[in-house]
Amino acid sequence: MNDELIERKGALLKIDAADPDKSTGISADRLATYQKVSGAVLRNNRNAVMKELIAW
Image 1 (cartoon, rainbow, N blue to C red):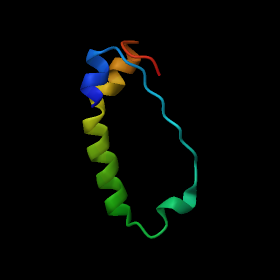
Image 2 (cartoon, rainbow, N blue to C red; image 1 turned 90 degrees about the horizontal axis):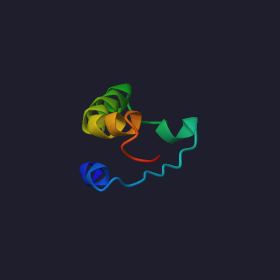
Image 3 (cartoon, helix red, strand yellow; image 1 turned 120 degrees about the horizontal axis):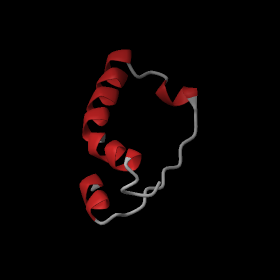
């Protein structure tokens, strides 16, 4: 999906809210794994945003 967004020169809308209670009960290892995997998956997307190839 992210690669198609870049290819079509689409736009990205992200709604984010800080809620520290959302991660209650999730192990630190699991959160670290999520951050590592999502960082790798979204690398192309972040590069496209930084190069202004897609709007955000």
